[in-house]
Image (cartoon, rainbow, N blue to C red):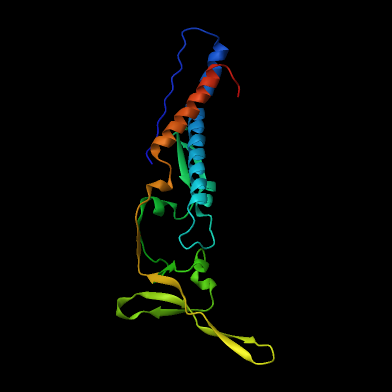
Length: 213
């Protein structure tokens, strides 16, 4: 996202000195940067909360609230001597989704796990105690598969029936994954700029009219 610079100059030929000082303080770069920062944060948060409602995971599994967490992790700080606002999103993975790129295993790991079933979404493979590693013949890749087992159920009148369970692919394994960039993860620059312009202009107008709100 590109930066946005705002410079405001208040000029009066004559007038109440006290009023001029009040205006000078109200329209200082520090105050205007804070107004711009809050406006940008609110615009981004609104967008991210909207994505959290409209983008369920492809497997229709348990939702992790990724975009809601990103929204709550959005904040701003004034920088460059309080003449500008820097907005940041404290959420692991949000940069990757926006810019895209190749993901490789870290920490000595050899594989990236990709959920294959809804119950695996939002969980780490180690949370399951019944997975086994399988390499498919003919270059079919590798996966973690739930171990097959037989569940016995007692029948009326005595005896048991056995039901086979397991055998499903829970995670596909990849040496690397390349994601395409997704600019829609954040609101477009034009929207952010227009919202900031609207909110800063409204603030300046209120101050020039003598409102303390």
